[in-house]
Amino acid sequence: MSVQIGIIGGSGLYDMEELTDREELVIETPFGNPSGPYIIGTLRGHRVAFLARHGAGHRLLPSELNFRANIYGFKTLGVERIFSASAVGSLKEQYRPLDIVIPDQFLDRTRGRIDTFFGRDLVAHVSFAHPICRVLGGVAGDAAEAVGATVHRGGTYVTMEGPQFSTLAESRLYRSWGMDIIGMTNLQEAKLAREAEICYATLALVTDYDCWHPDHDSVTADLIISNLLQNAKTAQRAIAEAVARVPAERRCECATALAMAIVTRPEHVPAQTRRDLAPIIGKYLK
Image (cartoon, rainbow, N blue to C red):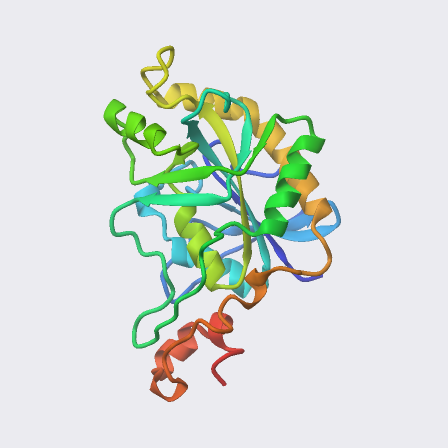
């Protein structure tokens, strides 16, 4: 049975307890090392690959993550869909700590992170107006509701650089823009997944009200981890349920994201670039 579903676990979600028939797989990529070994196993009748985003023991800062290697590793395993879980702060009163948000948009406030597989004499521009797979996002929302979570569908995830949390001025600015939640990791994953023609959806686990809230004017790591550990069991059940609900066939635009995106003429693409990106571009550059 091939591995077609990937799971990225964020802060507090370092394992999937239901995963059986486990094996660890270390993957080397042209872009360096992923965050750690991929845990391959069976979950609700599906072969899946789990990756702890921040590495064993939570060693990697958001800015230190090798997003390209992480997504490339999933691609080489044959993964077609990724469920990502991550801790976020809430920018709106109605998104309470321990709620789950399924965002459908992102705003980038990071600085200089590498978030494309392209370059090195190969140019491609994928469509990214709708960064979350509409089908997979729906599956994630349905699954989270099915296990009893309070779920909010839609909204914009502000991706900040970190590792510091927001200043009060920043938090108030994002609220004035109408933003919904804030985190440090998911946008780059979504961009690279789209380039790799992998469906991507986020289960954003609300841990705090950021610093804008009058009753939560100081965000601490202890508070966030405490809330996230409470939510981890729900997140695991929600992801397991989502895996069980994944449709057999992909009927979304993610699967052909590169079909009209590659601009460089094939004869001008260097041989090394072709080799490095073969799992991603091989079907388009013969």
